[in-house]
Amino acid sequence: MTASIRLVGLLAACASAATATARAQQRAPAGAYVDGGVTYARTRSVAGTLAEPLHGPVVAVAAGVSRWSLLLEGRYAQGTLSSSDPAIEKRDLTEGELHFGVRLLPALTVSVGPHARAYHASSGTRRWVFWEGRIAGTTPLIPSRLDVYGQIWGAVAGSTSLSNSFGHERGGEVGARVTIPHTRLGLQIAYRIDRGTGSNPARSDMLEQIVFAARIGAH
Image (tube, rainbow, N blue to C red):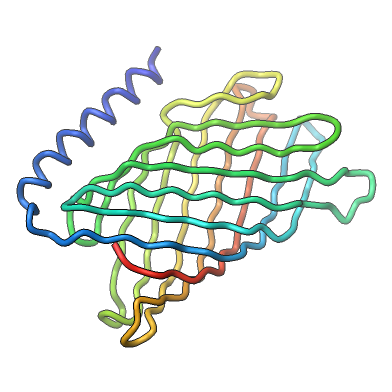
């Protein structure tokens, strides 16, 4: 109940901010972008004293559209992770996100939305579903050429297929984007980390990713 109240409150706050900011920016141009790239992913799942480290390449795509101060962004990633320990079986990672956001300032946005992740193996599937709130900011180091950005997020509600109930989830990302002069093409490198735990802190799941991507468009 408490998590549901937090989620409703966060949605209401974003809706209120969207209304106020959209009125002030009704003449702002629309934008859209598409990202595609590869990440090197490393995950570590812990159950008590047992740990399952996995790593491998993951293909990721993302897209977003904006109008006035409103943003809609999505991301999907998929790959196969393995371990240097032959006793640990491979798992197929799939991850998806969808966020509705509001640009409060030219370089600052807040957003909310679902974030799901699953690890598939012959022995079974581990699933995490988060309802997140996030804050993202961007700063130009070289105007129209090089931007650095960061974002942090946390779950206000969630669920897991683990034997215990959902505890909490937090994550963040930092990176840089270079825009190729006289084009709408950009290159990105970033580091992101996300950690979810069950109601029993001894059961957790951490995913780290180093991201290399190309972008067409802007928002």
